[in-house]
Length: 374
Image 1: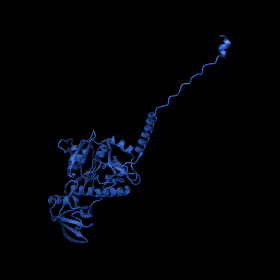
Image 2: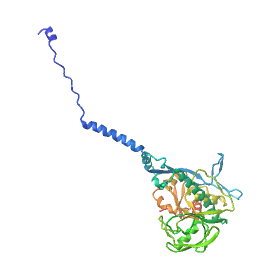
Image 3: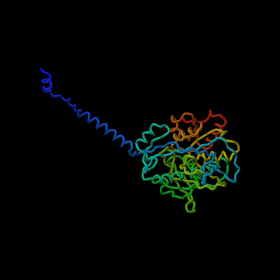
């Protein structure tokens, strides 16, 4: 065959490779992956029904805070009275609450908090009851702070044997309780079983002495007229202690002025630390011995220390602020056990006497006999 024949010969057709179509299961897999990613993003950014508690600012009751004009002022000031130098720190702790019905947290924010031991995730209704707005909660918290400051002054003056006037007043009556239909708002409670009561601690003591289901005679003043009523306490749903179903507050008449100059902080949990700060300033010597001590707890006018919320966050806040000692309400011990952050020791106190004894023992480096949770 000649060269021309070869060039003229018909070339066989070139076969093109066929592209293989991906099986339908591959497309389904990609679709499910995309759906999962989109679903995860939507879920993570969706509003959740939870709030998160985390450590808030720390304030030294023996130190200074910013005043209204920006200049530092003593957190506790007792003008026109003899006060004494202090040392160390007596820190009060606060807790931030992230989230509300008006500003809910996303599920992603909640998930992040679950992995942080200094934060606690809580159902929103435990912080903001149904029907309560964030502003209403803030107003309630501010009122509780004001009451705690008054009670702290009363507790400190009681410890110092300084007399003051006090009237226990009914602030509200709970429906379907022994007090319903018997006591009224603004009634003044003067006596229980014939003995004077001037603060809620004394009233609680009288009810506890009587016990659940036992008639207690209360002497009251209503619209200027004194009278006697009888009620049988029921068991509290919280701890089983005898209660009659009233909210009470003390109206005090103090012989001295005590200024507590702390703004934009709410709640009653700083009461014990306020009382310790007042007591330290009004007694010779340095109560703390230079130690950095933090603590929390409500205070009654008679000195009883009560339970508070957010104690885990407060222990972390204290530790992070440099405190090495922490005073916790005895009634919070169940919340403390197993939750204490490294680097801080926690002691249990039931009243202001216990708290003062604990601070003095810490100052003397003699804490072996102090009560601890658990």
